[in-house]
Image (cartoon, rainbow, N blue to C red; front, side, top):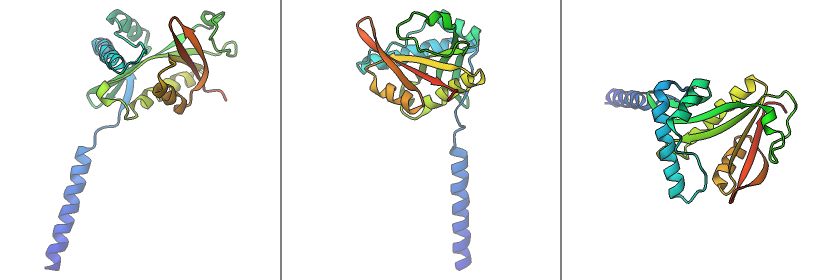
Amino acid sequence: MEELRTYLNQRSVERKAARASSSRAPLPTVRPATTLDIAYIADLSARVQAKLIAGGSLQQIGPIPRVQVAAQVTAGTAYLLIEGDEMLGSVFVEPIAEHILRGVPCSPQVASGTPLYFLSKLMIEPQLQGRGLGNVLVDTAKQVVAKQGGTLLLDCWAGNIMLRTFYTNAGFKLYGIYPERDFEIAVFTWSCQP
């Protein structure tokens, strides 16, 4: 009887282990977006914007015209968050020329010659938001910038406290809050330099 109980317990443990390993989803990864991803990114931006509006946010993220997405993809500045074959989100990380920021009241003072990058259109599927997936895209953006020894800039609607907290927790520093038409924007920076 004891042998049978031991055998059944062992089989139960084996079945649980098999179920656990087969139910584990692959970890999310980020890859450069391709031309095959243009429609998905453009449509994602419309879904994300609809959720922002429904929640009363003034944050503007989309809809992004497909031609604009195509330009980012062609430039190699669009990234896609995937898990297995499922697309979960996207972000743009593009270099900006330092001279473009000269004279802009909210432009962060950075060391001359430091490569500057702008993080924009960080988007996660609306039903998947709040699960930490945005961190995977932010970490990728920071890796892209760190390889160049640069500084990453971003802005968001200053009234979006959750997003401001997200960026602060991701290691960004609030540079300042500035007027933009009839609202304010919060500007954040992250640098691989101490």
